[in-house]
Image (tube, rainbow, N blue to C red; front, top):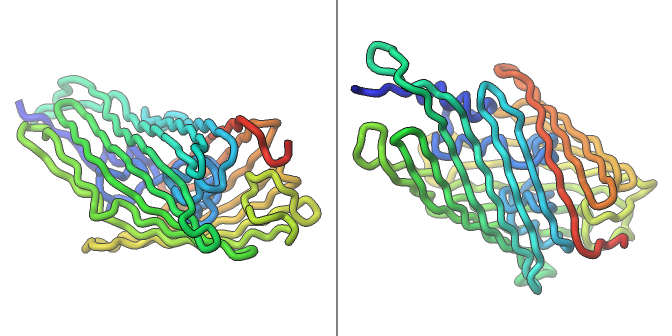
Length: 322
């Protein structure tokens, strides 16, 4: 009996903030990783400076000195939920990181041609990433590389494939610039279709550019990261960031812009906000308690329900302010 499955409905279940023009294979990544990034409207390419940058820009991994464990959880929305774990570890001059993200929509109904519900099935999408941040010419820029493995499964449908991202970051005084070549040469996924036979999907290559201004005292040192535990002027650190994304070889207009800002108070508390046409307005906050950093984001959207996001970074090893 022929099974019918609504791709459009599944898209909204998987990622309430996604754009319908995005390819199904990576729509679930549209919302991004980490409540800090989401609170800043996903403007992170130049500012990425915690273990979440294995997604945003692996070149930012070079800002990390301690071992870091990150966890991120999205509360269920319309039976869909997601979680993310990442672990970062310095190995000599290279900072390495591994991450796992899973998005699942539960109890999707499979029906026959008459609309009769045959059974319910969970739809899961996962991406596993391995990243390295290093400096070939540290006086000019830092480099980063991410290898990621995609996997999707729904009833008889399954598909997987591997992609590669390349990142760069550069800084001069209070200015930072970032670049990520995402899905170099396109990421090709293949597997088994709903009705038998093989299926293929392509995630098009994209370029992501970012600029940021970090307003802190001149004696704060080379690192402009608020996660570096340095105190700025009057105990304040202000970060302003903007990103632009554009396709490399794709007929669809998949370009987008993202804007964000945040202010830190004595590197212990932070408030932030962001905006993009694709995702709408976002707000956020952070609190650092000892070696635990808690991030929160509140996402407003005109077409969907408002959402809340939470993430945590736990720092190990010697910190710069120890």
